[in-house]
Length: 148
Image (cartoon, rainbow, N blue to C red; front, side, top):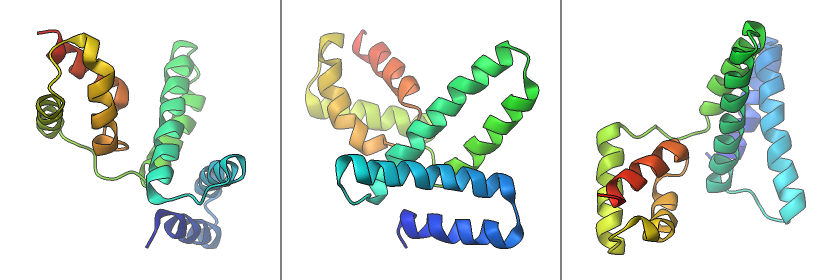
């Protein structure tokens, strides 16, 4: 079953169970999917759905940090709940060890020797880990390894 079909099934279940918060979040995801289809005239694949979900989670994490700084715990909880729901569309997250292994393999594959070749390595690495790790964390780990 594709992620798009899964999204539709999840929305139906949320409607049946009268879970308004979950339904609202799922509708936000569907809205982003439809926006992508219309703007770029593409059929949304599972990979694109993962990218959309990753972007939405990143936006909400940024909001959480801002709401925390403003002592708005009610909004922090709302954003964290949305993150949990949207995370259901992402594949299992990589562990630290798995991430380190993938990074080292990709560096070896690319032949990169310095931080100047960061873009080259990221271009190879991104498709391998998209949606399975925080890209900011990935970038900092990669910089550390290439600067040695």
